[in-house]
Structures are given as structure tokens and as C-alpha cells.
Length: 135
Ligand SMILES: Cc1cc2nc3c(=O)[nH]c(=O)nc-3n(C[C@H](O)[C@H](O)[C@H](O)COP(=O)(O)O)c2cc1C
Image 1 (cartoon, rainbow, N blue to C red):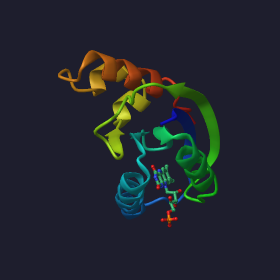
Image 2 (cartoon, rainbow, N blue to C red; image 1 turned 180 degrees about the horizontal axis):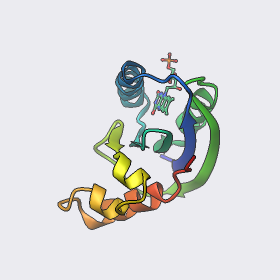
Image 3 (cartoon, rainbow, N blue to C red; image 1 turned 180 degrees about the vertical axis):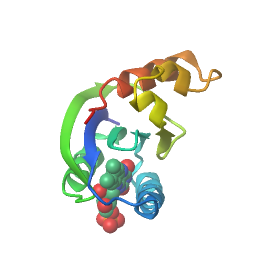
Image 4 (tube, helix red, strand yellow; image 1 turned 90 degrees about the horizontal axis):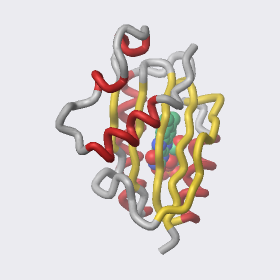
């Protein structure tokens, strides 16, 4: 199987509510399980960054769906590459919420992530967080 991982960043559209967010995650997990897509979504209260990985055609279709989703805007693809093995094999869509303290620059992303996280995952998350746009 040709595997590909795409990482993008975007802004939450004004008025996005916690309930909308729940809906996005629930639907994403169901769709992704169906399409053999795995990944991780990060949100800092204003902006998203998401890595989605899976079969090339499924990733193409998903990028198009998200790009057309009015709940986010200013999508920018940060990285797009072929991979031999999944980075997030167990997550139909993992979710990390970065809290305001980090947004305000009071402490680093490293402090916001669990200390027990395996180092390779930690590294990927830190690199994703560094792509988050700020307002
Ligand atoms: C930030 C963000 C992340 C999303 N991530 C996914 C995802 O991982 N998988 C997915 O199927 N839909 C995701 N969506 C939702 C899609 O944009 C789209 O609404 C959905 O895939 C349409 O599904 P449907 O064709 O079953 O109605 C995301 C939406 C937003 C705003």
C-alpha cells in the first residue's frame, strides 16, 4: 500500500463551538476507520494543525473535504510525503488541546505534552506544534 502523510495548519472559523468540535472528531474517527486513515489533530484555541496519513487516494480526498469545510479557513499544507510506516498507527484521530498558557508563550510545548509519551511521538508533536500559526 502506498502510504502518505500530509500535515497542514488552518484557523478555526469564527463562531466554532465546542459542540461543533465534538462533531468533527466523532465523524472524523468514523470516516477515518472506514478509509484506513490515521492521524493527529492539535488545537490551541484559535488554530489547528493536523497530520493525516493513509493510502494516497484517501488522503487526497480527505484534504479536499477539509479544504472545503467552512469550519476552518486559511488552510496551508506544511508537509506532504511518502512514508513506509505509519506514525500514528493506533489513532483514527488523536487529539491534543494545547492550553492558553502555551499560546501566551508562558511555557513551551514540551511542558504541555505528557512526560510519558514515547520520544518519537513527542518529537513529531513538537514539530507539528511549531507549524501552528498565531494570531
Ligand atoms: C479541523 C478539521 C479536521 C477534520 N478532520 C477530518 C478527518 O480527519 N477525517 C474526516 O473524515 N473528516 C475530517 N473533517 C471533516 C471534513 O472536513 C468533512 O466535513 C467530512 O469529512 C465530511 O464527511 P461526510 O462526507 O461523511 O459528510 C475535519 C474538519 C475540520 C474542520
